[in-house]
Image (cartoon, rainbow, N blue to C red; front, side, top):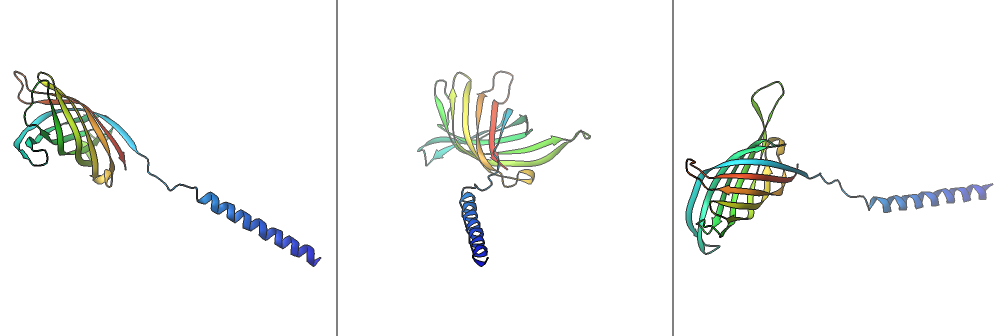
Length: 192
């Protein structure tokens, strides 16, 4: 009887050891939790608020325009007011040529309207910097494309990181219009 009891204990312990080993092997393959990336496309319509300052850029060795600024309304899942300040080289805009975007910053305060109230409610802001971009000029307009980094956020978007891009058109003022305009799609890919 003792031998049968001893064999049963050995088999039980062997089963526990094998199960624990299998458990450890399975746990090593479990990936840590990764927050999901949110992708949001916003339509943007903006106007120029600063035509920039021309200066010499040591990094490019050319005249550049610093602080060429726009702000405008975004429409979509994150309605707000985008403010964009960019640096471009060369400092002149000529048909058939292009300008490289060498830096700049952006902010996007986001608002929402509550169903019971008429006034917008501030949800928080995203902010970041321009990584690279290009303006390809035709007569009085340019195809505009740039990539950006999301450096952070505030309130609801505190700790946000990610990147994105803008693709659209920049149109210089025509008769009866005082400022240039931009229109296009501002796409954010962020991790909350």
